[in-house]
Length: 197
Image (cartoon, rainbow, N blue to C red; front, side, top):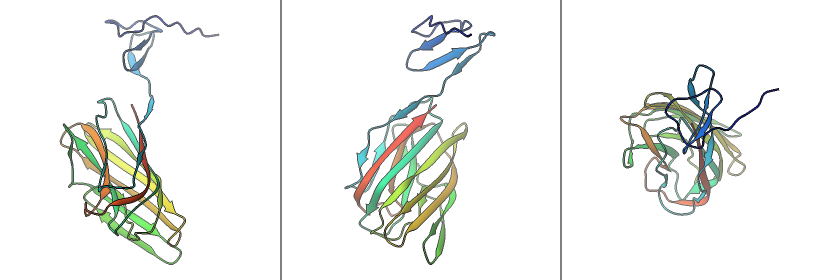
């Protein structure tokens, strides 16, 4: 039977076998004294997507390696596609250089389009209430990849899939939910993110 011993509540200079340390982050150490960060999940505060042209989640910590953006019944007052953009530094959002595409399935048609300004769903139905998620994962350094899916039980039973990547110029610090034209206004639903190391 294994025994777990808690020996420190702050980071120590030299890792010792069996230590679990906390100082804003959790670490485990093995018999060779190698330290590894343990994965944890942090859920942000949900935001009602009922007004404004953008919803921002800022001040993401440097250790983040995966972000899941979640949508519940969101829509806008126009037909521009909903997208997620990544921010760096003191919140400068990258608006070009994304490589990806999205497809929308309905009962009668398949529509696809490329995305260069964010990761998104090619929604062109202003009355659709979209629910789903987009997961954004750190590939290496400041390069991130995304995949996601969503659906709407109204407006023709729409189903969405999306995927893409972006090489940022600096470390990721923020996520923005907006539209491709940047002027359509959110008028329904809720948005939140979960991030992890």
